[in-house]
Length: 578
Image 1: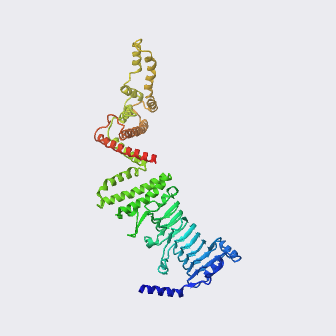
Image 2: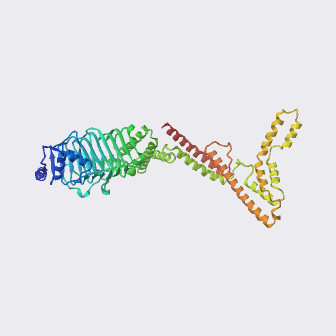
Image 3: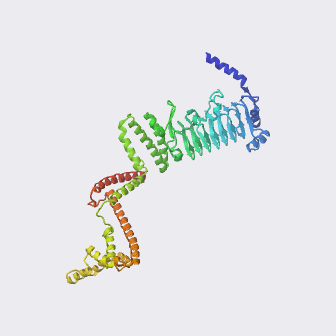
């Protein structure tokens, strides 16, 4: 009873505060209507006013304001339009107008409005009206915008505008549904186009976690929803909304979360720039806890239902990317999705809620490490390359029986130069004597003697083809012999040389010594890599040409190679199929 009495007193008093306009129930021109609003000295309601385009007033007044020829107009009082009827053929153009108080439309029709370069010091509100279109261009809304329960036939377009909240105005009014909101939008009447582009939504830090101050686009139906090149310094809530045709978001900066519970989109016509919504911005909101959940606080989700809701948001975008053939964005979305799943499984196991998920968690860790959950087969090859080089480095410091390029070792080659400097023989003489020891093939003269002695006993081609094959054996030694001729310039022994020759010989063969060491080290490195590659790929030599502890390491490398190459194959096939 006390509450009813209090409400009656408030309504009685408001009759003295709220003024009806002098043009109620009348038909006026656009120009007269705007001037009447500007003349108001108190909170005024314009009710049942018919606004029509009339010559010559509107030809001069409205056209001049539309083209920017009028100066700034100030509307200082709280204005509410109720049941006002606008011209069906002409638009209400409010350009360069500053509204210093609340401005609201209620049950008006048909609204065809352009706000351009306007400033709203307090809330702009459109409620339960029939709207053809509303364009808000280059405006400043300093205390939020509300648009709900309207029947829109065409579009709502907002561009190049700035939205914020003035905390000094909190509690400024107790009017119905005029609590502060940054951007509240709700529409279930008719699906229509909403386009928000090049706008800034700015919210104080202390309000960013309060759901009342999200950019609210919830429980609405859209034909097309476009968010382009906006800066959202707040959370954007799209939960329980439906986009029939195209949902587009690109070049936006989401500095808060994006709430997507039960957000229904058309996968074929969805165009999402993944880089703008990545890094765990996709979220859900728990109305009971009044808390936003995403990948950044996944450890605080103890409810499997909440986790499933969050994953479904990622699946929504993932399916859209796949249906459009956007494999790069689909993979990036899937990796973030699986990272959240991995973190959730880890928390389930470590908290003791579900110990059975440990192996699922372990498998996710393996797949993330080696191939980004099957989306990046090249990562497996990259890791394989590092493993191969690691084992090649181990084999480098242990002896093995591979001599793939030279028949002699580095130390045998250095001994040739040492013998040359310590003996009167030439380099070619020393080389020939060593080649004779290394060569297992009969010499040409021995071979020719064999052919002569076997004349008539062996076919003719032994003589014809024997010579070329023998000469091919000799060609292999030609480069070395040519090199020896170039450096064979010291016929005397090193001890017998004079001071000048000794200095020259020391420098020259010092350089040759270093180059020889570097050359054989390079060959040794190649041999080590070849051995490691052979073991890693499990091709096998038949007999592993290495001894000691590294022999056991080859078994480990072979297993790792089999594992990584298997992951690579499966990941590659998965990507090819996609």
